[in-house]
Length: 299
Image (cartoon, rainbow, N blue to C red; front, side):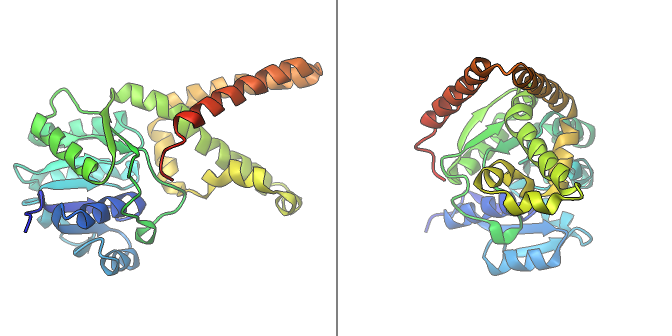
């Protein structure tokens, strides 16, 4: 019988990401024990029932006792909670325990780790799995969520090589395709391709919902509206934290997008059909090229 590579994994935030990570490791036989930590008792009950976690703790219980002999800790909570969690964890982390996260922003998480982890900092490996959907909770977890999907690590100069290897191996076991990226560059890129689209979807739906005749707009909205606004069904708390955590880069992208909207408005004002076609063709060509590169990606 094969001995699991990981004896104990502690997952803080047993939702879509944390739950899928735990489930994939368990189904691969790569972990002996998964401990789930969260705020919602009903969600933790679901995690145990689905075989995601072997035992669970709420955050008002003595969950930190589990850290002394943990091989790996995954922080899969909204990024705004990570600083306080690291502060709670630091005094009781085992000497060989590796800590990673799944946050969509990295510079703020790294700053929190530098503030709180002290001597444990070399065993912290920041990460970001590029997978997910608008669903949440343990019931949304899937062992195949990360299969063939990118997982970006943004290690610190101090990060220990064996700690990074442990995190890389865990994500690879989940099916992720692991690479490394500078944290600032990560935040710059994802402000444009992830954080901005979510903010735009939330803003459009909110703008229509606040109209006195908003019900008419929703009554006649169809597939285009559904496809564009799918992201507005995402977890508001999580996306609040992401937007605030990456506010500088996101504001730059909002400014660039606002300039593009002004360009579109100018074309409409001048009835410049040729200019509209040029803009639309450029966008279509770029998107189709992106789709072609990803046509074999799993859903």
